[in-house]
Length: 313
Image (tube, rainbow, N blue to C red; front, side, top):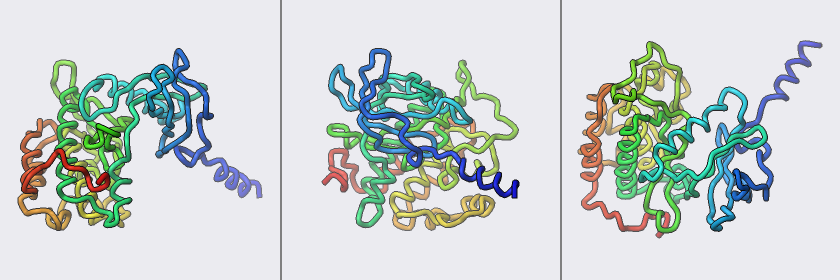
């Protein structure tokens, strides 16, 4: 009887996180050294934290505040994210960071407010698919963003549709890469690659990660591009061939042998060179980013960067 009660209590005490948890912050409170960031309400939540809409009282600008608990196994995620955003300050395809600090058992980052993420955009469309032209435009921008991130010595390690957002207003045609809580430096200060570890704990999302990551190998820039490749497949086709596969061993094997045409049945055959070029790259390789952008551009007659996306038109 005693053991059974302990089991029930353990289940009852299971910690709620992200959007499932009660709000971490009350509305109307002000954050920051000079208390200028006033919280409005929670607008999103993920597996680790919550995101709030807030106002910078100094200039009345709308901002986003990302909040995570400052204790526990994931406490350093937001600190890591702030380091990446600080290095990417003013760089295209990365949100501006305005402030980072602690508040009553939480860590928070105040950053540029962005629009919807690509995963939510896809699901909201009638076909639950993004057009090839739009996906090509987005992919070219994301490759550019990854090149800039990698040039600073960082890899993302969890690139996926929900971690790519469009901007607002005059930035609505731009895509921004977000969520750097799993990022890692892959370069030393002298620009050389850090020594590969013998065994690496899994970092990322199994649906989008490279097949090499299933073997717990060290990640490099090429793995971020694999994540982009699979993300584009989901955006264009509406789903990935392994969507319902639960076994990690089976998932890894499918990724190793799955032909390009099975992943991208709607794309021109010339896009298969994206896959072939990825498979040639090693963990320490520096990708030819322009080549991947050229492959994407070759899949449409003309890349019209001024056109409205279908979700805005």
